[in-house]
Image 1 (cartoon, rainbow, N blue to C red):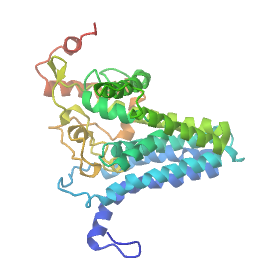
Image 2 (tube, helix red, strand yellow):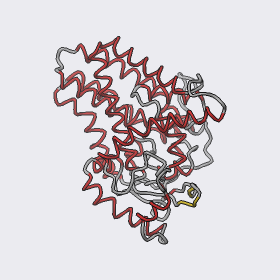
Image 3 (tube, rainbow, N blue to C red):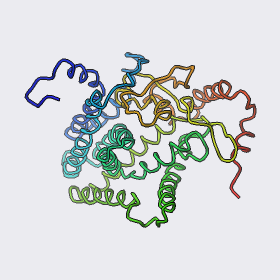
Image 4 (cartoon, helix red, strand yellow):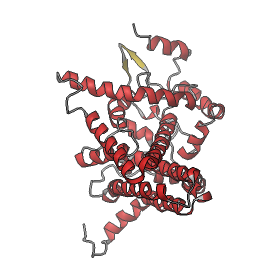
Length: 383
């Protein structure tokens, strides 16, 4: 690497230019401040850009079906890794500065202050939690700590335990709370996962400690760290903005969690791994997650839409995740911005997605004719 005063070498400049589209998320930060400074209709700027501008860009730019070289080294991926690392202090500064500024801003009335932090929640959910997802999968302890910090900012620290210990193990089975069932609307899915995910994460960590003959109260339980970090952000919010600051902090956290679970809902809707008997399921394959190749939204979401490959090979960094064609993985008809909006209207969602789920079942599991009976037999109620 060159120092700060030396121009990038051509090879390094080429690496940077390839990674540059994934840095678009930084452009959302000044938009949040524009909303806070001007109020009024400006508070809509973050949701409009995140949801609608990227939808338009997807339509204009189309699909990206090219796959990165899997032999890329960590040095080759430096500029891709850098954005997820840099985002942590950037989001911290954004949240802290607005928690100081907005509660005392005389030109903002109550609904405008809430609107500003709704936009902040769109950022901390769409970008922050997504980047924490990338970081928590890495072996580097510092990156995993960064994931914990990002999740504490939205009061969803248990997501790390739930995602790594439960979701990846049981995805596309009834044992995974965040795999949306066929015909389950988002408005039923959402309260269910809020209730079940925390418990499943806590139980998974407690079970790991029990295998080491340790109680859940052992200090190695990461929930102690989760609670401490979350408490620290409550203290910071109160110190900067009083009870108004705490309320606005809760608004952004709630919006961020809602954004995350909207994405979770669409990623595996209706997909099921085959039950092999004795509580075992077939290995996770690309066909057990919905794939999307829309170019612009993959830039914003650092290839999260290549979800089929993420579950097939969870240790791959986002820059080398592979995309799949319809012969290997089921395809969403649109990128995540459109699909999450569709999910909010269950009748429309079912009209678009249920035929695709039925087609998926016929393609991969033609031997199963009665899925209701199959699911009942494969998943008997507990005794």
